[in-house]
Length: 465
Image (cartoon, rainbow, N blue to C red; front, side, top):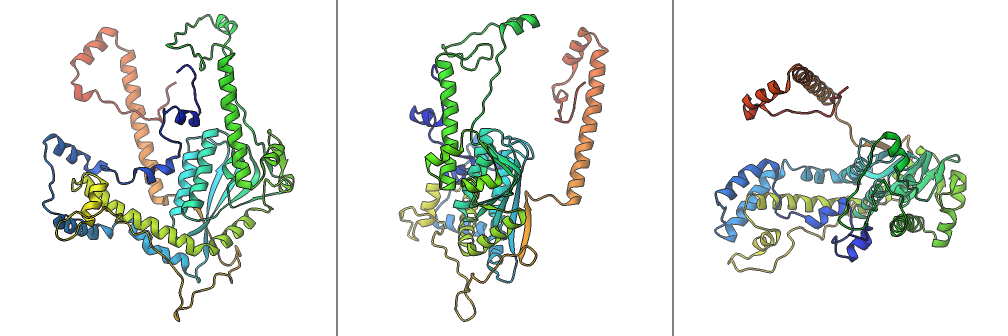
């Protein structure tokens, strides 16, 4: 407590956290570990309270139940529908679909253009069985460190998990956190006048001086359980506190330069020579290795389509494995949620047991040896080398995140407007009523009012003046 705050690496060393990772890694760590959906939580909770448990009389009965429910639900499973669409990716007569994700403005964690939304859009494009490559179109001067790292992790996830190439296309500016987010892209395109670089970290913390407090006419008393006022805004950082603060900033800077060196294939010495917050034009960035090619959005889309076409078989295999595992895991979710198995290990034992009921060694019920190939009528494999990307002839662009249909969007906006208006009027009446009553009347009305009528719904769209 006296040496905090700590960076993640140091926290792992001290045993405060288990490991470092991103939200996209949770899926592979958790898996179907006895999850309970919202739709079945109430029934499951009542069963637990009444100590009612679903008992499986034999392994064979369980397998029959599991297989029957699987077949029945596969028709409506989204993963199964995506499985049936994967062959379209390999159809040589169809245009190559390139997904486009936009990173615009200041990089923040929340909001429509926040890092979580950008990462979700990248994953949505990666899971789309029609998309062969992704273009990350950037026009941003940077922003939050954690938000930038989240987007960079999503780019790595798309390229390593699914093999889909991600190509960065810079607009007017792509600097600092925006460059950090795209440094591991397969290829980076910039215009000659693009402002890029700014490989560095800027950090500020306010300090409210005693002179300001005297001017306002107030005072502040601080109490700490340990001698570590590192987060106090009423003291100048000095001594050990200043050293820790500077050390954390240096750690972020080292991570930034390390990612640039790894993503761009540069030596640490060369990376340091172009770092330290230096700003470059697109032409200068090409000369020092920070970008790969001078070109606009059209050139980036064509290059992405070419890479995606060449990687179609690999992408199809990765998508096929992913959705087969997803379908099997969803069935495991349902079986465990229904109480037919207590855990994934028990589920695998039940599925791998032989007909005599003897327990076999647990094995993964998800196939891993899936292999997709493009074969012609005579048994010869198609050649993928004859394709030449042309945005006017054989490329289709699909933007992410996908927008809702106009009708659904209109209904949603009307409903939001109705709720906001209703709540505004209701709150106005309540406030006016409270203002017109004295304290005793308010207390008496609250005591006489039934408890079930005291629930009030609040809206983020309501503004008080």
